[in-house]
Length: 414
Image: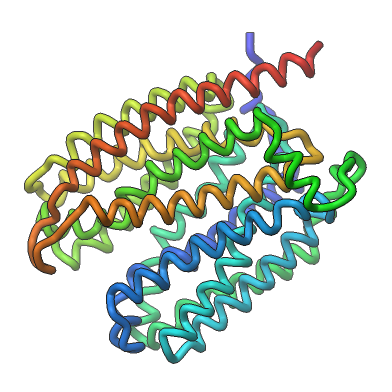
């Protein structure tokens, strides 16, 4: 019978590591998410066309993807604490530069810089957590770390919009930079060096380490699963607000409430899913959540109109499916790499996640059409069917990841 590891308490230091990395994730996610609600202000202030704003948003994702690939070979050659600080300080500077941009080219350059540094932070955090927590505790850990996503919706986005209305669109970027600077100081003072992986290094240079990481078949299974999960996740997201307003007829004033309620639901759901993932089989939780999400997506994307209350309910149950997939799959993927490869693996994994998300958003734009800015979105249900098909393939790939992880655990016990 499987031991219930959810009853084993974390040490004070483990709690600090989880908290500081959750705040790190919160700042990085908020920096990415505030671009969308600030879109109208930015386009008017910097005289940008919608297509230019789209490029400014996607520039972060693609530069983050490139950065992950370039960093992968070096990711296991340094103390993970020092690596985290290096990229986090670069992220802080990039975010601050965003607040100083007074033209489209400068904003684009600032977003590229922010993506180059910010896109790697998540993978370094995952490598640290994987080094410090075993596979049986990672469901709980991932549940808490992913709280940054919900907190950014509940607290970050509404506060950012308020600050932008009061002091201009630059204010939210200054807020994120100041918050991140405080977090960086805490990392310097309290986080212990993470260097155990350095004792196991065998590759002499970064290029050979990158090649050996990509060459391993089990790792490629994890990379493919992550990329496919990202494609399915990013496809509907860019058009969610437009669909709710133009097709389901909720108002602009109701939209922040929708974001906030959905965010609150994730704050409740994620720790519960995390604990459940450690108690039960992670793939089983993932598969059930995937089927759940497919059903909800199939119904929601075919709605022609709905009350605001019903839209809220659908967004909450959709979040249940999304979080139910994200947490167990993330925990499973962290079980694939051995310690000496974790930094490179997580960097490549995060890179593919960003690039796949950027491609998915661009591809979704070729499916969904709108006759004018007040017309309903067309073919949004087609997008839903594509997401459902991708989800089916993702279930198979995550099953293969689960088999790889179980085989590794079995080998460790022998």
